[in-house]
Length: 108
Image (cartoon, rainbow, N blue to C red; front, side, top):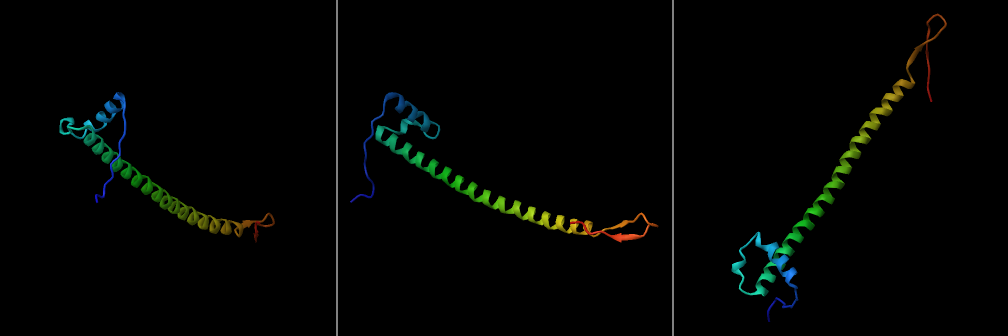
C-alpha cells in the first residue's frame, strides 16, 4: 500500500493562473505536462515555505525571550549600583552652619 494519499481539488482559471505564477519563478512550467503534477509541486513548495516561516517565527519568539532576559539583567545591575550610590549619598557629610563643624545626616 502506498504511503501517499490522493485528493482532488477544483480551481478556477484565475486561481490556476495565480498558482502557475507562484511556481513559475522557481521552475519552468513546460516540465509539468499534467495539472496534477503542477498542483503537487506547488503544494510541496507551499508546505516547505510554510514550515520555513514557522521555524523563523519560533526562532524569533525564542530570541525575544533571550533578549528580554538580557535586558532585565542589565536593569537589575543598574538598580544595584543606584542603591549603592543612594546609600552613600544618604550618609554623606555636610557642613554645619555652626563654625563649619561637620555632622552626619541620614536621609530617609
